Structure formats: structure tokens, C-alpha cells
Image (cartoon, rainbow, N blue to C red; front, side, top):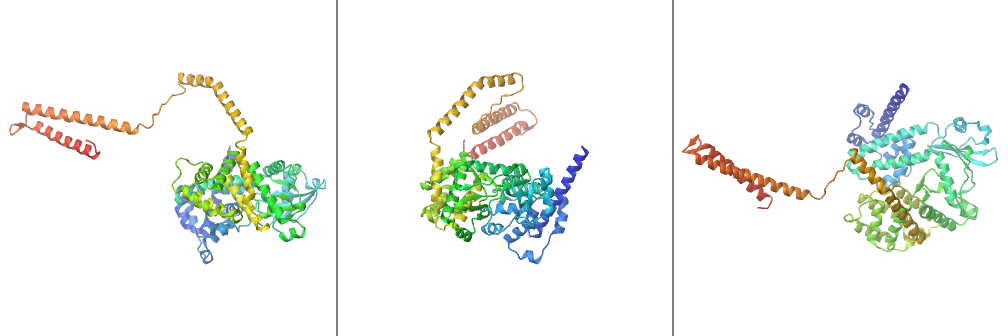
Length: 563
């Protein structure tokens, strides 16, 4: 118990120190106004003020560059967040997203002996018993992991991805602080409330959890390989599970050419147009057929093997779209293809889980303008990246919150278009996507699908009817024993109740007024003392009070517009 309290206290101190360091960096780069608007902990405000710097170099930097430098200085978690924000063009102006796109997840390599220590600790055996050799120079060195080429005892050529020691606690600590700052932004900065920063951080935290868990990445590779098992145009590296753990991932080394190295592709006699077509075909199958797709298909993660075979690498970030979302997105594209603003608007609102009736003011008009700009032109002239940016801006303008994986899918399609148009400038990516979207729509009306739907519906109804008597008996038993209460709430009667209450009040008021007039008249007639000019003073006071009350009642009736 004592040790647990000590650990908790130590974590609190560590979190406070990291929190202070993060805010100090933002203050250094000129974000004092934001710090003042947030209710930061009082004990930390004085140190924050002391940390503020007004360096001439920083003050001369543009806003986007200051934000990029702040993220770079704060380390791997914030670099990853900046990379995510660079794709959220509906959140930040183009200047910021363009600058954040410059963030590179490359850091100096850690000493090789630390890599060997991690391998020995994770694999529970000396590396000499598992590997014939491991290259000391890394193939790549990123903020989360470092990659080395190696040869297993079986003779297999592999690449070993080793998580940097100590990176996981730092990332989790940063995620906690990000969640706290996002909650403060959402509560106290009105301009950010509509963008739901807490949801953005939650999505980012989910992605980081994926990247930190190499066992999950190995499962991604296996699933990806399984769904393309019968596809000859793609090659998926093999996972060596016996030398893989949650912090170590060993994959088959594939000798291939990076998709963006056009000179090497041409020298190898590969067909760039065929490569572009195959990449689009594979990405569309991932998204619209399987619903499980590579979330970061940039040129560094796509390599080309002989005979134009495509090889995807780095399965740390994957996206998932359920069948309902894929079908709704297909309806959205169908509405656009048919130039039907109402169909497209309804589908987009369903994607955002928004109210469908009535549509938001101006939403259909904005969607019609969106369609006019992008779809009333030859398919080959459309730019998917611009289309996605415009769609992000449209949804943000109407405060629509789209599913995180839908944004991920659109970003993946945008990255695919960027690579494909460089491989083959005349390639029509949307034209190639049309059959896949049509297939999504057709699957909804296939007899097998309808039959399965009705079978599931019938099964649910049968289960409900079978369990209904038991549930009714259980509820009645709980009510009888006093363990449950039945509460009935009448809705829609507020106006009626208010009118009845006003009528009753006026009747009561009138009865009191009438009683006062009658009693005053009796007192005057009986000449109850004291008298004034031979008239009862009490009676006169009663008449005056009755007059005031009558005048008050008349004013109240006139004010409500009814006599």
C-alpha cells in the first residue's frame, strides 16, 4: 500500500514537471494569450511567468513556423500530433497544415548496445542464439522505434523493429497531459469547442496505442496478408512471431524499389502506369471491399517488386470502416454522381450521426456548390486532394463531426492520389474508384444480403418474444418487492398546465377580491368603528385594497392579450 502511494506520488510529480515543461515551450514560442485564457493550476502560474521568453528570433517567426518548432522541441508525441493535424485541413488554415507537414519523425539513433539489451530482455534469450548477425547501423531511426537489418539462424533475411527504451512511459504521460489541455480548450476557448479537441486527442491516443504495440502491428500484417491471399499483384512481408514481442517486431526483408524513385523504376523496366493502376485498385479493395486499410500509404511505405508487384510496409497505423459506414459513404458518392443534393446531404448527415429532418440551414446549398466545383467537369480533371479539403471545410462549417476512421480513409485516398498522379499524371483515380463504390451499393440489395437481414431480424424477434414473459415477470416481481419503481412522465402538456394554472390563479384572485368587497360593504353598513365622517375606516381600507387588486388583475389580463 505504501509503495503504491509512493509510486502514485512520484507519477504526480513527474506529470507536474512535464506539464510545466510543455507549457514553458509554448510560452517560449509566443502563446502567452492562450495560457492566460486557460485555468492552469495556480501553483504553476508563477514558474510559467518566469519561463516566458521574448527572444527576438522567436518573435520574428510566423505563427505556423512557431507551432512547428514548438512541436519539434516537445518531442515524439507532439511530432506525431503535428503530423496528424497537418491532415486536418478543416481545423487549421492551409499555412499551418503546410508547415506541420514538414515535421519529420527522424531522430539520432540510440547506441547499438542499448538495442541489444532491449532484444535480450524482450526475447528472453541472448541475441547470439537467435541471430547470425545484426547490422549495427540502423536502416531507419524514428522517435518510436529503430530498425536494423539482421539474419536469423534459419538464414532468413529480416528487418528488426525495436522500440526505444523508455519511450512508452513518456508517450503515455504526454497523452494524459494532452487530454487535460484538450479538455481545458474545449471548456474555455469557444472557437475550439466546435472542433472537439478532446475527440481529436482521443483519436490520436488510439493511434499511438497502435504504434506502441508491435504485437498489434504483427496482427495487422497477418490480417492484411490473409485478405490479399489470392491477389497476385501484392506481396505482404512475412512475420517471424518467434522473434517478435510487444516491443520487438521482426519482418521479412524485401528487396524492392521505393515507389517515388521513378528513375530506378524506369531503369528496372517497370511500368509506371500499371503500377499506378494497381496501387489504386489495391487501396480501393482495402477500403470498399474489406474495410481494413493501410492508413499511411505515402511513397516510403509502398515499394515495387519485379513484374510491377506492390509491397506495402509499416502496418503500425491501420484504419477500419464498418459495413454500414462503407454503404453510407457509397450513397454519398451515388448522390454526387447523380447530382442529387438531397441524397448526398442525407448520406453525409448520416455519416456524421446528425439529425436528418430538417436539414441544417444552408447545408444543401453548400453541398450543391461543392458538387458544382468538383463534379461538373470531366472525371480526369478532378483533384481528389482538393475535393477532400473542401469536404472537410464544408463539414466544419456546419459543425458536423465525422467518424475518425472516415477522415483516416479520406487522408489515405488523398495520399494515394498524390503518389499515383506523380507516377501517371493522366490517371483517373475517381473513375477507377467508381466500380468499387457501385459494388458497395449493389451488395445492399443482393438476395443473400436481404435474406440474411430478414433471418437476423426474425431471430431477434423470436428471442424477444421468448424472453418477454420472463422479463415481464422479473420486472413485476421487482415492483412488488419495492426494488423497482414505475415512473410516468407526460410530455407536451407544459403549455396546457401553464394555462390551467393561470386560470386557477385568476379565479382564486377574483374570489378573494369579491370576498373583500362584500366584507367591506358589510363593515360599512354596520358602521364598525373607528368612523370617519360617519363611515367605517376599516371598510374604506377594504375598498381601497379591493380597488388596487382589481386594477392589478385588469393590467395582468391586458398584458397577456386576453380579457
